[in-house]
Length: 246
Image 1 (tube, rainbow, N blue to C red):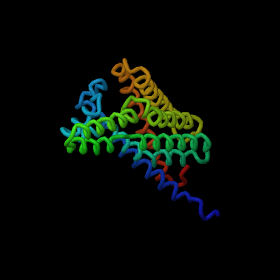
Image 2: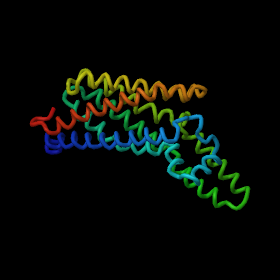
Image 3: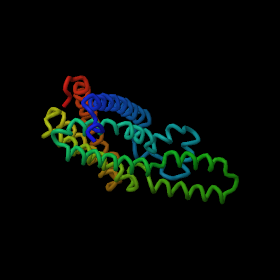
């Protein structure tokens, strides 16, 4: 059985893969910020009905997919190796909490992916555009409304999928405080960033009248989380290139 356990060389490779995945995820986050700035970043300005969403897909499919969090879904999946690398880095110092954070992140990511409606809504928009009778359009619009109720940004349908990864980030950041693998500064950045983003998610879900005000928490939270990612990525590469690993 000992032959089945990863050796130090394999763990180092995991650190490198995790660091590379984080860099790719950071690029995706920057793209998200750019797209959000170009499109206005106003949650209240998003199409509110299925028919409006279908119209947006016909005019600009990429914008329609972006407004239904497809880019966030891609970033979330890319980030999985990073969490596994963070777990691996704490396997000798604080494995219990690191494993808990990894499990919560994977569960949250699974929920996030399975509840996302971007691609189904795109398919419905094509069918709506091709419909020739009002009864067909009515049925497709109803199907679209059901999809939106299941998974639009700021809805209860995506609340758990958005919140759990941030809880995982909080747990992993607290794990860094006692794990002695990453600096305390790195840990504090992760705690602050995850807490602010979690607050933003709660506000846009349960206080829809202040959605635009809630974005005031999203911006600093996002910047702090990005700084956290940069800091732990640098450390992961150092671990991957060290002689003895953790």
